Image 1: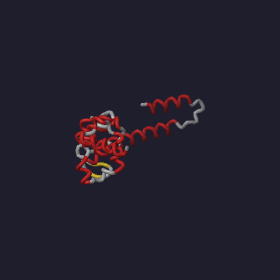
Image 2: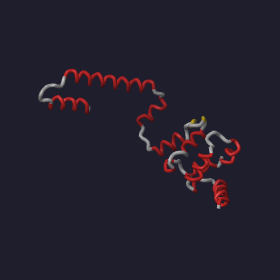
Image 3: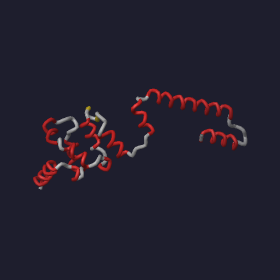
Image 4: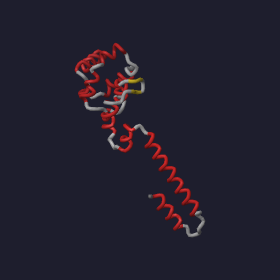
Length: 153
């Protein structure tokens, strides 16, 4: 809507008549046809279950909680829900899911120490240790971190 109005206004303000009006209108019309054709093709070829996410407005925190934490099954370092959740905990703490969800997932820490999945790097462990709210840590992990802190002093 804005483009035709702007073009009409520009042609009206052109007192010398130097703007090629018919050419500009043709270009605007062709551009709109290309735009609408592209949008239609995108809608046709988009995976139907993801179509609603294109126009569904969700705050980032809710998107992270509903899709990245609960549904997504891949991450930067591999495939599986654990990899996706590890990626989520790399974001700013305010975007993390509820502390209860994080706590329940971090209860796998001992298993990860033995299995050493690709996301369980030294950098990632330091991030959890320094950034995770105390309420998001399972009791065993809190004790482990507190013991390590006491040993350092």
